[in-house]
View 1: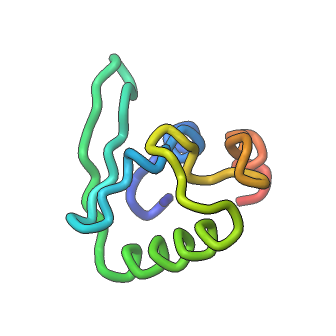
View 2: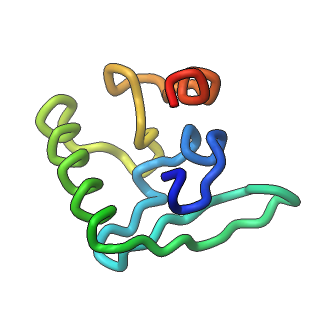
Length: 87
């Protein structure tokens, strides 16, 4: 996600509904100045996201669009401070 130019806060707020895997797009909602933007990604990122989604579906079942994309135990989003300390 860093390579796509996303901030840590944007990554932690991503929901399943923000991912358009067919068109290889992420929808980043309500960023600076309350604007949203579309972020395209390439075939390698698409492959990695598909693998991640398959793993999540096996563990937690199909998600709702408002469910967070990156979570601990499928319940709460990964905190942006945790992401920052890890990477």
